[in-house]
Image (cartoon, rainbow, N blue to C red; front, side):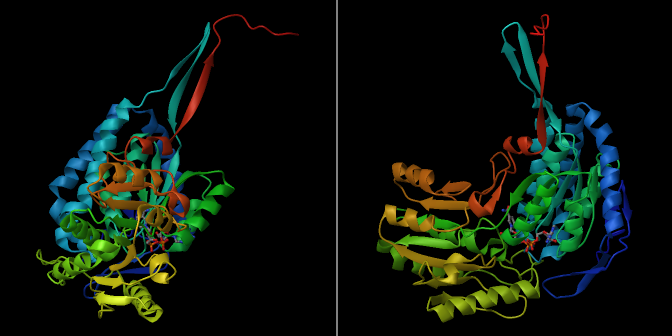
Length: 479
Ligand SMILES: NC(=O)C1=CN([C@@H]2O[C@H](COP(=O)(O)OP(=O)(O)OC[C@H]3O[C@@H](n4cnc5c(N)ncnc54)[C@H](O)[C@@H]3O)[C@@H](O)[C@H]2O)C=CC1
């Protein structure tokens, strides 16, 4: 299998070879090298930012409806090529093709459609001030840097590019070094859709390339999807230049199942919240609090359904659970599983697995103090915890530095809304989990991040307000 792109980078409207270190791309299922890329040098990062700054001026001068049209055309191209793009996404990430066909580029296309349509609706305010008045203009920020994680590489690129470009910004995007291929496709598609050269650029590389991008003098805003430790570094580096930031970071989200819940739905949601994409999802509900009355029934149903999960070749359309993105990541997940067993939690099913695979794994009889219940594992590992009542579970659910998401399953509507109001999370699902339609804001509180992606809220994070005061009378100076 060979999916070598025309070149490693995309600078100023065309593929350009990287001149930095080698960046091999491995297919997680086989470990085979499917493409061999090179990192960008610091000079190439600077070149990308310079090209973006130059292109941004003309792009911002277009009528918003014209910018929107380019994004809408790109969305249509993605939809036409969804099969081919999804196959590439599967090769890049190892995720099952039955997932990438519906969840990755599809979600990216939805973002391009949403922000393409929204572009022309963004207006300012008129503020009456007696005889004088003021008005506001929403202006682009300039050059935005996007830095992605490896779990949803193409979706992340689209979620960042769509609102940025809709508002008249240019972007330099650095995908994760684990999954560099999708962003290059997005760059090609945007050009085909009519985007002027230089408005969307792709650089490749590891953390040092990301660091060079964040501190480039042309960059006005940084949007990162990544872990909390990286977020801390990137936020600090961005602060040096008083740059705007969006931080989409990790989590250890609670999923609370009360004993009046529809048990089948709650079990299904807990599985989606822990095993989809082999558990490599930031908002996963990895602490599943189950009220004590239904604890055994919940675990029995869960085990029965996990036994039917089809694990294997990600390109086989029947496969439901694929490999972990890299051997290093699989090693970290195995270490977390071993630590859970050593801490005394009961392994209900799954375990370390072998090679690239970690099977769906469930722990029971865990306590809040165990690392299992405190640290983000970013793999298919569910920790179930028993609870007795609502106040107790809210207190325990909130006893974490993270605050990305939460879920509650109950048939009692008043309780559902009470819990949603009290959990410290950017998103709370009631009788659902992990659904992130583009119409809805998404992002974290506490250590899980700042800013919001998707929805009209994202517009504020890719623009700034200018206020214009209009004096209508003579100037009354006391001198
Ligand atoms: N909140 C959200 O929307 C999401 C959050 N995540 C989080 O991402 C993490 C997993 O992704 P990883 O790729 O392992 O994260 P990571 O933090 O290791 O890397 C993220 C990106 O930052 C870059 N980077 C690393 N050091 C940098 C530096 N000093 N300056 C600039 N860029 C730097 C990396 O090259 C990569 O592109 C998890 O913690 C997960 O929860 C993942 C998906 C969605």
